[in-house]
Length: 371
Image (cartoon, rainbow, N blue to C red):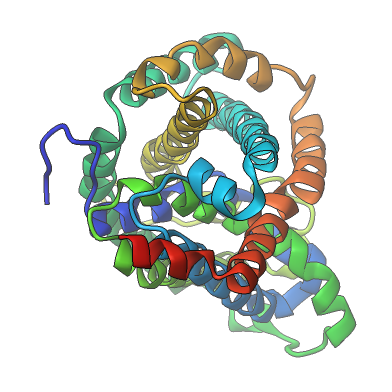
């Protein structure tokens, strides 16, 4: 459904936006992370993490639908006080900016390796990407929602087909042995896998723009389950093609796995390049929502009527963040630290504290009575 310029998106547009926000850069390194954490039992660890994130996503949606018509800053203010709302909002803003910057840096590295000459300046790739993202951010949430809805289903179908094609080269022996990882090791590996679902928390920011907020909880959970299915296809394909030991020592196992697939007699012989072309679009739809959410957070903090014009000044900040780390290895190290110390707050701690407070103080019931 398309709305006029009224800053509203449909529930299906929200679902598509959440799916594409999560599936992006994470899909490249997830197989390696799972292999390091649980070996051939990575698929089981993925299901565990997906189940936890589905519950968290439902909580996010429940919080939003409990305060219809209110933005994230207002929800925080009602439940945690206005000073804390400012602190949490700045915390979210910093996290979004830094995360988006590092995602753009990884995007530039992949493009240089797969689709362009290796001596192409990274800064040119980053700036080009930012200008496109900035344009969509300037157009607002309606444009982003329509774009996500237009791209989500075709991209998901295409991705499943690509991995299905690779299934003819899968070696069943690569899935063995199974259930060899101890329960304690699985628990230790959960945080790193949960962070591959980061982006689902954007429901907290975009929820106030949904035309039917009462369906937010169900939509968030559904989006997470769809992401889990896509991730499962990915892990099954890459593990079957490469095996556990090889996955551990590759930066992007998914790319390596697809490079090994050959379609004899077909018009496409290297499907990895084709998939990377599609991944460029997916990477864009990962950064654009985070970028827009950053602008919305600024607007809520400074209480401006419009958020669109606040997105363009963010381009220099994102450019700096994208070029901050010296090497790709440093990017992943920095991103791991950020997720460990900031991502856990965004994804788990703050939403759960908010849920507990709203239940104790029953603020959501007071708001519903007033409405």
